[in-house]
Amino acid sequence: MKKLSVFLICFYLLTGSGLLFAAQEEATNMSYVCRDLAGASRWRADARITNERPGIYVMVEKAEGIYSSFNGRVSWVARMEFERTEDSIRPISMEKRVFDEKGGLIRLEKQEFDLANNNGICTHKEPKRNVSRTRNFKFNKDVVTRLSLGLYAQKFLESGKTSERLQMVSEEPNVYDIELRLLDKETIEVNGRKVTAYRLSIDPYLGLFGFVKVFLPKAYAWHSAGPKREWLRYAGLEGGINSAKVEVTVVDHD
Image 1 (cartoon, rainbow, N blue to C red):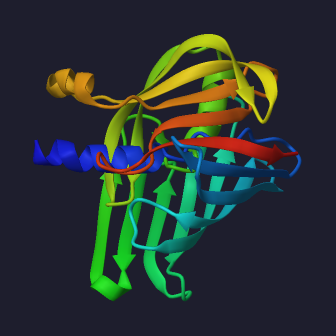
Image 2: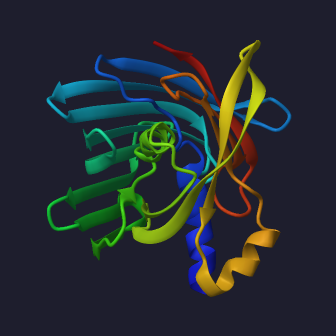
């Protein structure tokens, strides 16, 4: 059960802002804000996706505010390179740097993926706490990261799938099985306008421990039902099991 608890903390941390983008051939800019259930703003992020070369894209996310995993206000910059094919999104590399209010580095995460051999090398460092971990992984399913999950969900919807099991890389670092499921189509309000959207769930696949999911808050994401399948909203825990319940909503994109 200890391993299960560690997984759940990382799972919700990763999905807090994971279902975010619809990759396009031109550069894509997007802003999104995280609020608590009372509507108070916690953090805001700006992101940009660019097509670096045929089939290869780069996403850069910059954010600042209050996040459950850290004390005080923080900021972060994450850069992910990924491959986009006709039917899939595959991460190539990711680097994320988290800073305290004074600009000091408090966390560094790096992930490198060997797509040909389904291998990954992931590191997690917290210099001020003298923490440093490196792990090697072998994947037997499609792999996603916090930043690539939203892109993958777009392809999932475009392909007409209703359920799929994936492997997600967490910041520990570790790898866990998750299930992405299409639930229904509904009308929601986003920034004062009514939008028809697909509602998705992202669940840990716990095998023999599946009964535990009954006691966990659900995590959901909504993508536009339009042709681009754009991400619109996330609702669920921000970070670990004891973290704030939040809603992350897109506020601008082009």
